[in-house]
Length: 376
Image (cartoon, rainbow, N blue to C red):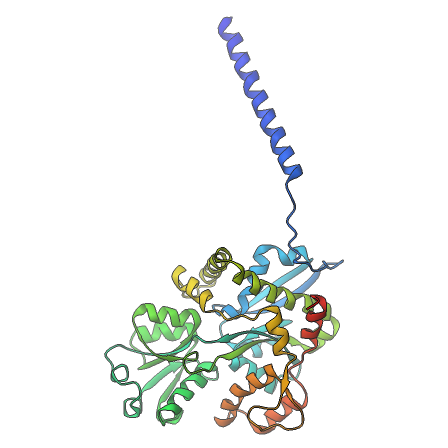
């Protein structure tokens, strides 16, 4: 009997402790502060859907993912849907799959030249880590500025992209052109795998793939940063979608640049962004390591809100002196500095160049709307 009483008392004590703990948990939950993840923006009254063309492995797209992971889009009542690409021209060709999409110079040039339904509304970053590699011990590595060492070599890279422009510019510095080498067209991610397996003499690649090439021990000849060719990456919007959903696109672009500022805000945020970048690369089967992911985000040169607005509002004459009808936005000048490479290579014409500028295919209406929305 005495043992039964002790057991009953013990059970009552456990029950009281559990009740007290539960009550404390309820009390704590009731007074915990609610984190506002709207970033000062007004949520939409009805659910909105935005389809984003996303460049896997290139940090130019990732602030959208970071904002999504932080819960900003949910807080604003925006559902985002991603379609993933690893090539800008392919992204442009599949433009029916997205409402907005971000890419590098190759995709920008194609989108502006061939797809009248698209308009360029944002700048995502400036690529400084577009690199040219060769194997250590090769004749190029021994003397990279000797033109004789380059003639006839096989260069592996995605043609029609910024990689081609960077290679051409370097060859020009040593008195050569693309005609002096053999170009092998290969996707950015696959090119490193092939090069590591013995294909080609020269590799041109960007961002995480370039950092992986460093880790493999290949010799970095130069890169867009060293050549002072930080070509812009930018975002297109479907023209009709923009006309009917300007508030939605304005909010998304504002969130993108606020997310860039979030990354830069603290080492902790940079670390978190690198981790999310790495996890996404793993999900998509894109070559990356945690070290590469962190260095990729450290290389990233995304534009803050104020930098974005300035690039889309500051005007001056065409740097090349080829267009005299009006001053150009700074972002137009930056794009044309790279676009002119493709014109010189015969991919596009001066008529294409003039049409882009005549029709103002690069618009600052979203930048001005972001400026008003954020009171900058």
